[in-house]
Amino acid sequence: MIKYTLLLFSVFVFNVSVGQISDFKSIDFTEADNVAKLYKGSDLNNLQLLAHRLTFKFTTEAEKFRAIYTWVCNNIKGDSYLHNKVSRKRSKLKNDSLRYVKWNTKYKKTIYKNLFEDKKTMCTGYAFLIKELCFFANIECKIVDGYGRSVSSNVDTLEKANHSWNAVKLNNKWYLCDATWSSGYMISETLFLNDYNDGYFLTEPTLFAKNHYPLQKEWLLNNTSTASGFTTAPLVYGDTFKNRIAPISPNKMNVTINKEECITFSFKNLESNSNDKVSLVKFIGNNEHAFKIYDLKTENSITSFKHQFNRKGFYDVHLKINNDIVATYTIEVTKS
View 1 (cartoon, rainbow, N blue to C red):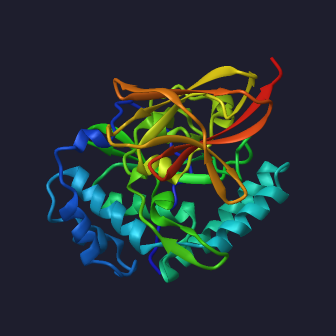
View 2: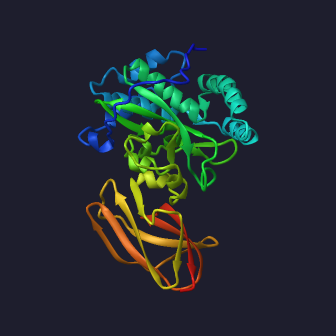
View 3: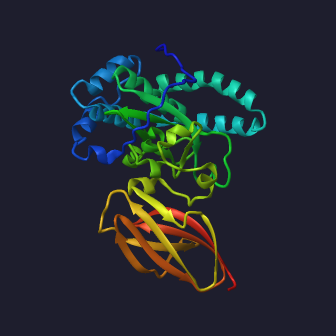
């Protein structure tokens, strides 16, 4: 077992210079991805050697980090047992933070043991491994702890911190990434499906904040997101990040309007694509039904359209880009 040192807390002077993936649009990451594939299956007994193999061919920090990131995402599996055990303990000790922190610190030994022996882990292990490989590649990288928002957590209010990700410094700018959610997802209690999602790699901070809220606010990277805004915003998904779509309006998930009132939906295209098919849908059972939309337009990378709700009731409304659901709202239509 490799020896490692855990740095639980660090205090540093934070100089914010923020970047995003578009900074590297002139770089073709194909070679970095191919190097990661070349060393597929490598063990974790010598992280220094693995970091060297993944990065020595490259001259840019961005390509070195890309090779590290994609290797981790495609060689480490999510472990639902670890995740569920931590979640149960977090729930049990929700009113006793000191006991939970003490237990969690001790349990990290089990998390890292599974990571190095079985290449299976949870978000803590993903973020730790990214950070360690970056250390050996001489790339500054931090572990960021905070809240991950999904259909089952931190939906209406902040619960206990439940997620970890990374901030990495490339060319003197800070970037955000989430190897856990890039790597894939559990399709059963025991089966992990590797399904690489590039949308969580060096994500634009405004989009990243749609489902990540850090304990240390400086890791919002100049984004003005607040805790209350985080938990009331529309739900977003992995496909939101694949399409690099940042919902703008409505800015809340739960919306109340009058019957026959018009509502405007809008989102920012972080990677402009005029061929995108935009729709607004609801589901009745397994059947999808599209709403009629009008005034669809795109200006300055912002797409908007309108819909008028003519009947009272509650509507689960989903914004779709092509075949992907990228945002969910609940609309309550009351009597005018």
